[in-house]
Length: 133
Image (cartoon, rainbow, N blue to C red; front, side, top):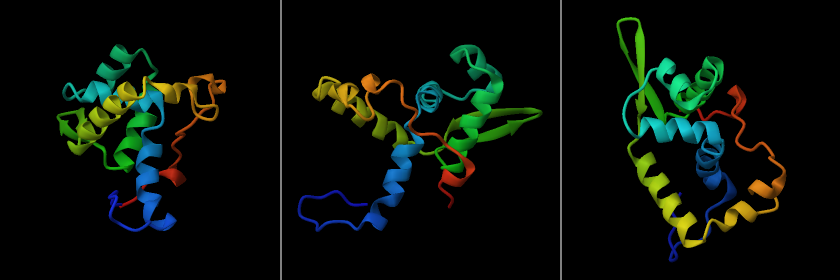
């Protein structure tokens, strides 16, 4: 997906990978996992303790992020240490923070996806919705 003022319109099919990327990050739990992993590697037990979530919840969201190739792990003995697999993800999230700041977080008022939308669940990652390489 090229976003350039001089380019023509990208077809909807051409935008599907970008939409899948943003969809994979559309869950607050996944964002909190990515935010924590931005500080360094962590095991599932570390994430459950630090984020206050169930092991099954953390594992499900890590599987989604791994399926999208945003997160990976390395084994050390019987332990798995998760890390950000694509450093560009951190650049994307920094850009998102700048955009949120520039718009005074107005997206929170969006009637469809904002926090006022009644807690509508967006970004649900199911095996069928994961991006496959």
